[in-house]
Length: 423
Image 1 (tube, rainbow, N blue to C red):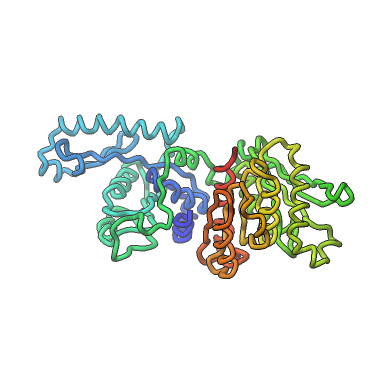
Image 2 (cartoon, rainbow, N blue to C red; image 1 turned 135 degrees about the vertical axis):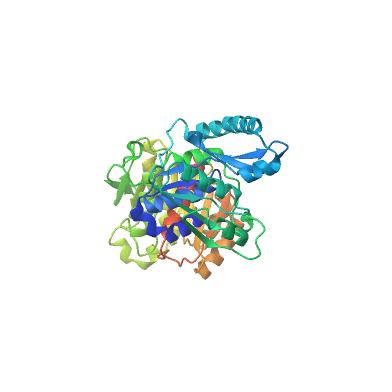
């Protein structure tokens, strides 16, 4: 995700060209998704099968693409003594594999036509460049008017070799001491087929998608303190929402927090319900003692949670700053199975220190890389949490995640955490 967003920033000049973004499966697709989403461009895969010499399959003499596209190196065929019969046999085998991959990834959807289009071919990185080279050739053979090859990292040798394959080559880094793509990622875990299928099924163009139609937020009144106090909230429930994320804002904030609302909008687009509400009344918010009374705030959050159980869907918490402490405290009180998962943004888990060992809900701690003090507090909290947890440092972000792209990263990471931990 981070690599894709950084790459997208370098490709912004292509937005007006209305490009098609093609990811090389599997690892290139998550990177390509972020590029397509940032540019508002359609996303597809470009499936390339290498044509290898029959007695030495690692030695490629050409490539096969969808739509009957084939590119071959006549010089390698001659050198390797590959005749037309050999070519036909190898092509037949690879065509079967290509069709299987296309069906698995697209699920019957048609390939996006490339005729006359600007095409951005994206991979997670380039070591030798053979696959990327073949992908550029296939895209051009499928009618692309202009081919741009874009990767986060590449070997210097591959950069030189590929300059003539694409009309434009965009890369973020070509480190001299390059041995493998994965060494330049903090997280280079395997991309599964299911993830590719899910990303290809999501809308990247910004167009309305029937399955993700978002209802307007509905004002709700939330009774607490034995119905003596009523809190104001905004509940958004997309059709068929599989869960509701309850937001707990930080000190000095409210349900109108622009940062929390931006995160909520991303969750809504993904089909999740959200509730943003005021933890305190206007009068209570003037009392500084109550603003930092985490146990009191956690009690309020717990009451609102009980009220929302009438929606009969799993409930999650998203807490910011002191609200994150309240969320962890309330999750601990809810016990096992009470809260599906928790996400903390720039949180103060130290304020819920006495309850951390009792939290059973999977917890994601998101902290800005430049938020030194809070980062230390979260590292200590991660060691004490009695549940599955993960600490993610958002590089270059400060406490409020005001830097370009930082809050979007928070929203995407939160969305993934919530959906991955649904019961």
